[in-house]
Length: 136
Image 1 (cartoon, rainbow, N blue to C red):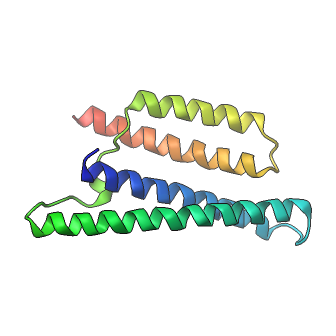
Image 2: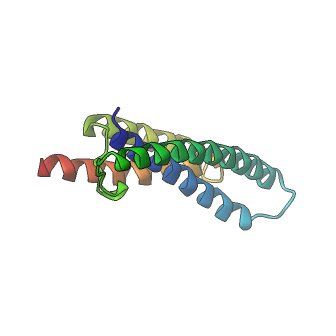
Protein backbone atom coordinates (compact mmCIF):
# COMPACT_ATOMS: atom_id res chain seq x y z
CA UNK A 1 0.00 0.00 0.00
CA UNK A 2 1.45 3.38 -0.94
CA UNK A 3 1.78 6.30 1.47
CA UNK A 4 -1.34 8.04 0.16
CA UNK A 5 -3.47 4.95 0.77
CA UNK A 6 -1.88 4.41 4.19
CA UNK A 7 -2.69 7.99 5.20
CA UNK A 8 -6.29 7.67 4.00
CA UNK A 9 -6.79 4.29 5.65
CA UNK A 10 -5.32 5.45 8.96
CA UNK A 11 -7.44 8.59 8.98
CA UNK A 12 -10.61 6.68 8.03
CA UNK A 13 -9.97 4.19 10.83
CA UNK A 14 -9.52 6.93 13.40
CA UNK A 15 -12.66 8.71 12.22
CA UNK A 16 -14.66 5.46 12.50
CA UNK A 17 -13.41 4.79 16.01
CA UNK A 18 -14.09 8.37 17.12
CA UNK A 19 -17.61 8.15 15.69
CA UNK A 20 -18.22 4.97 17.67
CA UNK A 21 -16.82 6.61 20.80
CA UNK A 22 -19.13 9.58 20.34
CA UNK A 23 -22.17 7.34 19.93
CA UNK A 24 -21.39 5.26 22.99
CA UNK A 25 -20.55 8.27 25.14
CA UNK A 26 -23.77 9.99 24.06
CA UNK A 27 -25.74 6.92 25.03
CA UNK A 28 -23.89 6.58 28.35
CA UNK A 29 -24.81 10.16 29.23
CA UNK A 30 -28.51 9.20 29.12
CA UNK A 31 -28.12 6.30 31.56
CA UNK A 32 -28.20 6.15 35.31
CA UNK A 33 -24.62 5.81 36.57
CA UNK A 34 -23.84 2.46 38.15
CA UNK A 35 -26.31 0.41 36.10
CA UNK A 36 -24.94 -2.66 34.32
CA UNK A 37 -25.46 -0.99 30.92
CA UNK A 38 -23.61 2.13 32.09
CA UNK A 39 -20.66 0.00 33.21
CA UNK A 40 -20.63 -2.02 29.96
CA UNK A 41 -20.57 1.17 27.93
CA UNK A 42 -17.79 2.63 30.10
CA UNK A 43 -15.72 -0.51 29.47
CA UNK A 44 -16.34 -0.34 25.73
CA UNK A 45 -15.47 3.37 25.68
CA UNK A 46 -12.20 2.65 27.48
CA UNK A 47 -11.36 -0.09 24.95
CA UNK A 48 -12.09 2.21 21.99
CA UNK A 49 -10.07 5.05 23.54
CA UNK A 50 -7.06 2.72 23.70
CA UNK A 51 -7.58 1.92 20.02
CA UNK A 52 -7.66 5.65 19.19
CA UNK A 53 -4.37 6.07 21.02
CA UNK A 54 -2.71 3.38 18.92
CA UNK A 55 -4.28 4.79 15.74
CA UNK A 56 -2.95 8.28 16.45
CA UNK A 57 0.50 6.86 17.14
CA UNK A 58 0.44 5.14 13.75
CA UNK A 59 -0.72 8.37 12.14
CA UNK A 60 2.19 10.24 13.68
CA UNK A 61 4.60 7.83 12.01
CA UNK A 62 2.82 8.36 8.70
CA UNK A 63 2.94 12.14 9.22
CA UNK A 64 6.70 11.91 9.68
CA UNK A 65 6.98 9.76 6.57
CA UNK A 66 4.87 12.24 4.58
CA UNK A 67 7.08 15.09 5.84
CA UNK A 68 10.17 13.26 4.59
CA UNK A 69 8.47 12.66 1.24
CA UNK A 70 7.51 16.35 1.06
CA UNK A 71 11.14 17.30 1.71
CA UNK A 72 12.04 15.19 -1.32
CA UNK A 73 9.54 17.06 -3.51
CA UNK A 74 6.61 14.64 -3.28
CA UNK A 75 3.31 16.51 -3.11
CA UNK A 76 0.43 14.63 -1.53
CA UNK A 77 -3.17 15.85 -1.71
CA UNK A 78 -5.18 16.49 1.47
CA UNK A 79 -6.53 13.26 2.96
CA UNK A 80 -10.11 14.26 2.06
CA UNK A 81 -9.08 14.28 -1.59
CA UNK A 82 -7.38 10.88 -1.48
CA UNK A 83 -9.41 8.07 -2.95
CA UNK A 84 -10.64 5.22 -0.82
CA UNK A 85 -8.37 2.22 -1.24
CA UNK A 86 -11.10 -0.40 -1.07
CA UNK A 87 -13.13 -1.71 -3.97
CA UNK A 88 -16.85 -0.88 -3.91
CA UNK A 89 -17.79 -4.58 -3.91
CA UNK A 90 -15.79 -5.13 -0.71
CA UNK A 91 -17.34 -2.06 0.91
CA UNK A 92 -20.82 -3.21 -0.12
CA UNK A 93 -20.26 -6.67 1.38
CA UNK A 94 -19.09 -5.08 4.65
CA UNK A 95 -22.10 -2.75 4.61
CA UNK A 96 -24.49 -5.68 4.19
CA UNK A 97 -22.76 -7.50 7.05
CA UNK A 98 -23.11 -4.42 9.26
CA UNK A 99 -26.83 -4.21 8.38
CA UNK A 100 -27.25 -7.88 9.42
CA UNK A 101 -25.40 -7.25 12.70
CA UNK A 102 -27.58 -4.21 13.34
CA UNK A 103 -30.76 -6.23 12.81
CA UNK A 104 -29.51 -9.06 15.03
CA UNK A 105 -28.64 -6.95 18.08
CA UNK A 106 -30.74 -5.48 20.85
CA UNK A 107 -31.41 -1.77 20.40
CA UNK A 108 -29.99 -0.96 23.83
CA UNK A 109 -26.70 -2.82 23.38
CA UNK A 110 -23.22 -1.52 22.69
CA UNK A 111 -23.08 -3.93 19.74
CA UNK A 112 -26.13 -2.22 18.25
CA UNK A 113 -24.52 1.21 18.59
CA UNK A 114 -21.32 -0.06 16.98
CA UNK A 115 -23.21 -1.74 14.15
CA UNK A 116 -25.23 1.45 13.55
CA UNK A 117 -21.99 3.42 13.35
CA UNK A 118 -20.58 0.87 10.91
CA UNK A 119 -23.70 1.09 8.74
CA UNK A 120 -23.42 4.89 8.49
CA UNK A 121 -19.67 4.83 7.90
CA UNK A 122 -19.86 2.10 5.26
CA UNK A 123 -22.76 3.81 3.48
CA UNK A 124 -20.66 6.99 3.28
CA UNK A 125 -17.54 5.08 2.22
CA UNK A 126 -19.52 3.24 -0.46
CA UNK A 127 -20.92 6.51 -1.76
CA UNK A 128 -17.44 8.13 -1.92
CA UNK A 129 -15.87 5.07 -3.56
CA UNK A 130 -18.73 4.75 -6.05
CA UNK A 131 -18.49 8.43 -6.98
CA UNK A 132 -14.70 8.15 -7.35
CA UNK A 133 -15.04 5.03 -9.49
CA UNK A 134 -17.67 6.73 -11.67
CA UNK A 135 -15.35 9.72 -12.21
CA UNK A 136 -12.42 7.51 -13.20
